[in-house]
Length: 108
Image 1 (cartoon, rainbow, N blue to C red):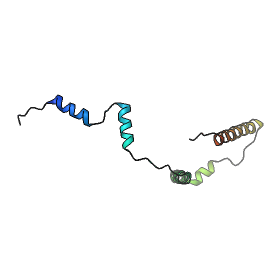
Image 2: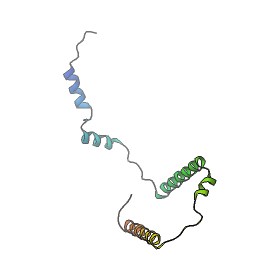
Image 3: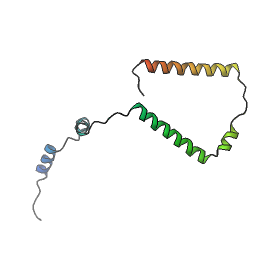
Image 4: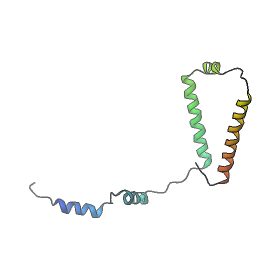
């Protein structure tokens, strides 16, 4: 029980055997030991998105009754030229963004 531990020798052994805990070098050593993950297909990713959307809708309709939500929706509205121009402008911007993202290598 009275044996003295050579703390400098112990730390020296640890420095030689363990990966360096120095940000970039440590991250590279950990990433090199991890197995490469397989990318999800577009179909499975879409399925997960639809499932999460359906789950969210189901939860929201369980909290807010459907009849109350439908009663809050307007039954008629007036379409002014300013509203029409705004809707057309937004739809043109969204169409241009969709075209741009399909023609470039832009992935979200």
